[in-house]
Image (tube, rainbow, N blue to C red; front, side):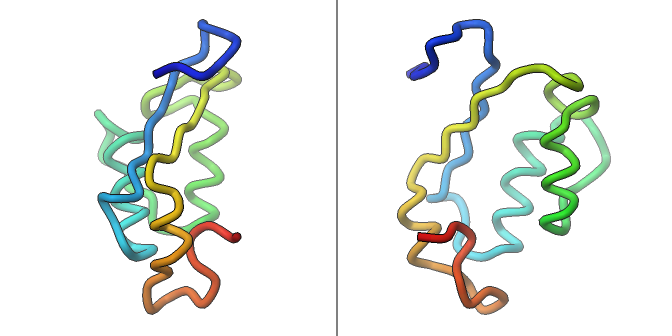
Length: 89
């Protein structure tokens, strides 16, 4: 379902049900955002870098919409490497 008012945006869907740790989050976003490349996200800085576009599944300055399904699970299951969860409440 596209909830955007701008139908030209590419929709990216992250599913919180697919991971329960920060490492799992990196794997999920690598699979989704870096499909077709041999580069993997391994840090929050790296995740920030790919959000600028230009490699992976969208271009530099291309508008995208990120939908995070099951985001509540990501807030509740932070994993051992984070004391605040992947998403902050």
